[in-house]
Every structure is written in C-alpha cells, then in structure tokens.
Length: 328
Image (tube, rainbow, N blue to C red):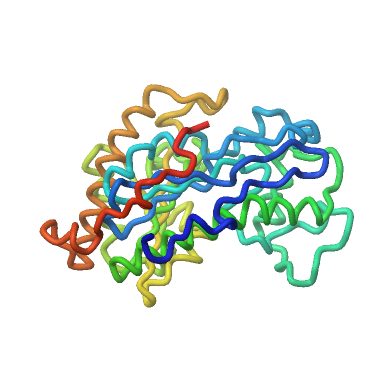
C-alpha cells in the first residue's frame, strides 16, 4: 500500500446513508488512479457531481434543470484522461445543490434550519448570505431549493456521508504525494458561467493561486502559458482567486501547493440545457496534454528525472485499483 492512502479504511469507502425521507445518495466520490503514481500532482473536480437522491428531488422547489445549472457540469469528463499523466483524479459524485464540497462545513445558513445551529458553526460570510453555503439555499438565478426548513440531523448526515469522505480521500491523496515526492500539488478544476465576468473580453480560463499565497512561484504562470499556447484567453485571480480547497491545501511553506483552474462553460456546454457540445472533446484533448506538462514540471521541481521515476514511485498493485471508475 502506498504511504498515506488507505482505501481499506471504511471511512474512505463509505457510501452516504439514507437521508430522512430520501433515497440513498450513493458513493460520495470516485477516483481515477494511474497504473503507477509518477507525479506529485492531484487533480480534483469537486463540483461535477450529477447524482441526486430521489427524496432530495421530491423535496425541492427548484427544477432539476435549475439544480443542474449550478454544477460544474461534465468537468469530470474533461479530466477523464488526466490520470495518464501519472497523477490521480478525484471527483465528487453528488450534485452541488445537495452539498458543496468546496466550502467549509462551518459555512451554514442558520435561517435554513428548524433547529439552532451549534456554536461551532462559522460566522455568516458573503457566500452564506448569498445562499451559497456548504448546503446551498438557492439554485440557478437565486431560485429557492427547498420547500421547507431542514433539520440539523439532515445536515450532519450529508456532511458525514458525502462531504467528509471526499475530503478525507483528497487529504490522503495529498499526503501520499508528499510522502512519495517531498511536495504535493493540488490542481482543483471548476467551470464558470458565461456571465461570471460581464465583459466582451471575459477570459476562457481563470487561474487562481490566491494572489500567490497558495502555491510556490512559477506554477501559475506556467499553467497560464500552457493554455495561451493552445489559443485560450486567460486571467489570473479575477473573478476567482481560489476556494476552500485552495485555501486548505495551499500551504507552500509546508510543501503543499494548490492551484484553481476555472473553465468558461461556453467552451464546451450548452448552459441552458446543461448538455455538452463538441467543444468538450477539444478541451479533453487539451487538458490531457496540459496535465502531462504540469506533471513533468512538478517532477522537475522535486528532482525526479525520467530515469529514476520507477525507482522513486514503484508500481504498487493497490495504486492500480480504481474506485468508481465507471462514470455516472
């Protein structure tokens, strides 16, 4: 077993329990593992989940289409070949309208619940005020999601069954990368709506490194150049500088780095119908190539040449196992 990643831990294999009055949510996440881990990079897509418990849908005031319009729809398919670079890719399976994996679990709106929130819940943030906390209150265009107030028990079941398994697995992947290579890099991938930056010159790609705080110097510029070489327009940290995952895992002084990539949805998606276009195939090809270059770049940083990759990152049978390889 590779260091830091223990898939025999029931906590990492747990499926979400039945929510009160709802069908089973199913597995919290899936993981595409490379045949051999040859990179200190971990790719992630927390918002591309599109599974919704049956009971959840029945409780919703919002339509399925409005729920789906806040997903980072099909980003997991754009990234479906990045594991060929020697790096794992983890992605959430449950829709963002049910629970947002890129928020702190303390970001809860007390007004959504019929019973008081515990004192440990965090202060109200602009995201919570906008209805976009860890359990969102609104869907597309501010449409209310729920017909009723939730209970704390429902919130805790979603946290324990969906949110925490994903974050335990992501943390384990980052620990493994650092144990194997001395440093670890998270590439957290998202998509943004066409009107995220209301400008005729709005970029295709936004690279977020929390204004240089979440990763060492050079990576953000390098990744931006990879997109520009392929004809994409780019921006840095505006309007997205990085979210919860970037803040949590981007600790360069401790050898952990994090970079966020936002992809303009119009490049690959019919946003109104939430259906992929032919542009998805182009982005998949480009992201596969970019992932290989990012992996090579980070290998150079840690001093791992092609001649000693096999020595430092030997094939382990457990690394070839794939959790949830079939995509929903």
